Image (tube, rainbow, N blue to C red):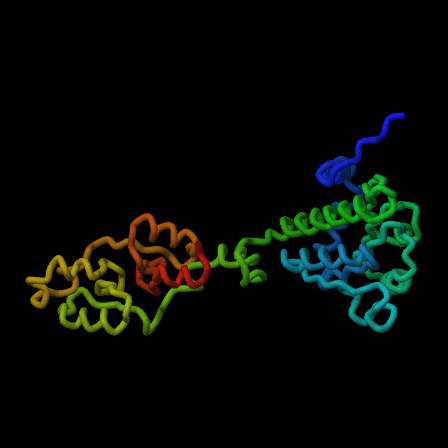
Length: 322
C-alpha cells in the first residue's frame, strides 16, 4: 500500500488560485443574461445603490458598495439584519438594491426583499441558486455559475465569494464606463494615497495671485531683484504689455550679466521663450519635465499665455509626487 505524498502549502495555494481563476474565466463565458439590464437599471435611477448581505456575502457586499461609490455611483451597504430593525428607512423609492446570498435563502434578507417589492424598488439579486426565493423575487437575476467551493471540505465560502466579488467589480466598471467616469472625477473621490497624488494637477499645487514673482518687461533690474528676493522662488516672470509671459530672469541670468546688471531692464536680461505648463497638466508630468530640463521652477500659464501660477519642485515632492 502506497502512502499519499502530502501537499505543501505552495501546492495548496497554486491549486486554489488556479481553480478560482478558472471559475472566474467560466463566469466571463457564462455572464448572467440580466447583467446588461442591471447596468441600465442603475444608470436610470436618481438615488443610490443599496447593497446588502449577511456573513461572507456581507463582507463582499461592503466592498462592492465601496467600489461603486468610488467610481461615481453613490452607494452604501446595509446589513440585512439591521435593515429589519430600522435601517429600511435608509432605502428610498429612488434607489436600487443589490442583495447577495449564495443560497438565495438567507432569512435575514427576507424583510428588505419584501420592502423592495412593496415599494417597487428595483432589486438586483446575486446568487448561485437561480431557483431560490431571492432570485425569483428579483427584477434582475445575476446567477453565479455552479462551481464547487475550492476548500478541502467544499463548504467554506471561497470560490463563491471570489465570483461574487469579481461580478461586483464587473458591474462597477461597466457602470463607470457607461457614465464616462473620468480620471479627474476619480481624483475627486480619491484625494489621498498614491492614486490620488498621481492624478493631481498642476493647479492643485501651484502658487498664484500675490505669490507670483511677475515683473514687466521695462522694469529696472534693481526692482526685479527686489521682487525675486521677496517672492523667494529665485526667478522672475517677465510679461509684455498684454500680460503674456515672454521670459524669465533666473539666478543664472543674474550671474551671467553681473557687470552690466543694474543698468538693464528685465527684458534685456531675461531668457526668452521660457518653459511653461498649463494648469490642467498632471503634476507627475510637470515633475518629469523639471527633471528632464534640470530646473526647479515652472511658470504656469493660461490659454492666453499669461502667467497664473508658479510651481516649485519642492511643492511636488512634498505632495508625494514621484
